[in-house]
Length: 157
Image (cartoon, rainbow, N blue to C red; front, top):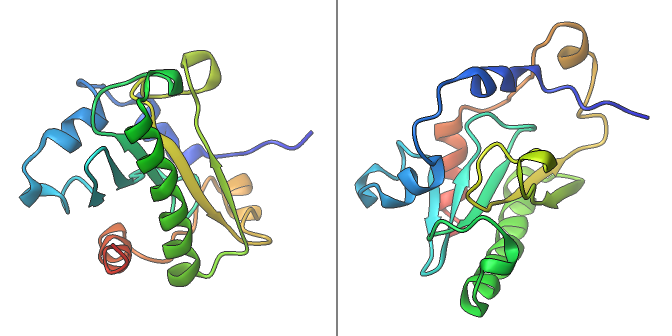
């Protein structure tokens, strides 16, 4: 068995949660999209950077409406989310040149969902991207500031 070490996420885990981060972001004025790390707003869903990423380039896709499970999505939401997952993967492939992806959702607290607002993770991966830094020194190497990643990805949407 292998373990995924992500100690840099502890800041988020221990932080006080004030409402739903996804609802707060999508309900904010469009002028605050950069502040809220929103890359793209669709009719039914939006794409947002993960402020506490598992890996560089980690993004999330969420329905605009607060829904907690896949079976709550209507056909329009489901279709737009799946299309945006594909579009996001293509943008990340072009921009960051990853060698693979983790794509999925954690539904429910027992499954590891930190937020109950349904969201899908798209995480770019490279061979060897888990090395000694996070394991030995509890340090994750992020090669670009989130604001630069945000600006770079917005060009694809």
